[in-house]
Amino acid sequence: MRRTRFAPSPTGFIHVGNLRTAIYTYLIARGDKNGKFILRIEDTDRERFVEGAVEVIYETLKQCNLTYDEGPDVGGDYGPYIQSERKNSYKKYALELVEKEEAYYCFCTLERLQNLREEAQNKKENFIYDGCCKSLSKAEIANKINSGIPYVIRQKTPEDNVTTFKCEVYGQISINNSEIEDQILIKSDGYPTYNFANVIDDNLMKITHVVRGNEYLTSTPKYTLLYKALGFVEPTYVHLPHVVKEGGKKLSKREGDAYFSDFVKKGYLPTAIVNYVALLGWSPEGKKEILSLSELEKQFSIKRINKSPAVFDIQKLNWVNSQYLKKMDDIEFSKLCLPYLIEGGIDINNQEWTNKFCLLFKDRLSSISEITKYYQQFLAEFILEEEAAAFLKENDCGEVIKVFKGKLSAIETWNSENIKTALNETGIETKVKGKLLFMPMRIATTGMLHGPDLPRSLELIDKDEVLRRIEKC
Image (cartoon, rainbow, N blue to C red; front, side):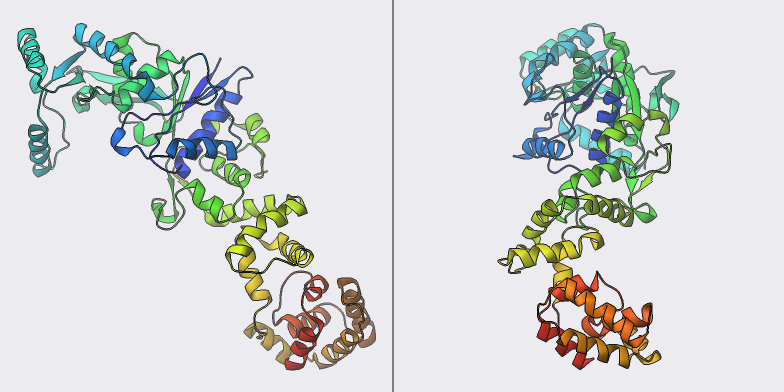
């Protein structure tokens, strides 16, 4: 039975890369009918802990419909599911490794370690701890501990040979042990380090698949050595390619493309975001790209995860989101538009008018926030677009516009049905068809060559204003 875990640190909002990890972790679990998807909060780095971030994690997974079977707020047989609440379970394993001489006490001061880092930097070398405390006798160790000297517990890395592990995406990877630092397992404050807590918790929670970014490829040998030293069964590793922008640039908080919440605020639907993010580094077998979560559950395969960096294409996200918006229930869609109209200072008291306006642009939006932009354009001062003005100059449109104005003037009940009739009658009377009929009428009333359904558009503009626009044109 597959048991996977999403184990974020509560340091703020969920990054797009972390969301993809959560999605793939969820899908791998759901690929087994008996599989379990687990949420574990890794809060051992107290300096980076952000108040309220745990609630953000809960809410994000809820919005994305990534329902977890076990977790801090739903319970389970392998809790607690918050690492800080498991603090007492880590040190005994570290002490077990000390007894096996697979780990040792380190009393080096921060000042000494900083000097070593600076020396390595000056030599343009990677810093690796020099193992100064590795040779301390038991008496020296006992004396220092009894004297209250702060210490950490470090893993003892074999000095020769290589450590090898297998990743389901990148294959077998070997790293020389000489390149692996004696990593800290227990910090001076008694908390475990990220790597050590991961290994202990994954073993105790019977995790079978570990999904994470490929930046962990170089540190995975440390995990392998720990599993071996502790006598644990190593899980299946699935490392994911980076998510980058065009040109290999990182996603940026400043540019608003790094966090899930950024896109939700802009009016992207969580379901659409999940669909698109699932395609970042993985491809379905067929050509269909609009896939619901249940469809992703059926199709997802580790074998189809790519090794190359995944390029985050905002235009592709826009397209995916637009497909979901088009399929939305009209009433639900209009409700989602209201907060953006209100934020834009737009009067929404005329509910019937507002609903008609929102639905007019439903098939044209990439994100819901664009509704405000369309409102401003829709009711802006009438100005001919340069391309539209050129079309009128190049074509004899005067008769069509004149007849259309007359037909509109005669309308007693101003609605889209009667406006459509006026449009059709204009074509019959002038014997003009196609774009030479429709474009002049659109240009004369909206100033633009292209736009949403014209009768429905004009219904939302006051009749006198429409006639004024035609006169001005």
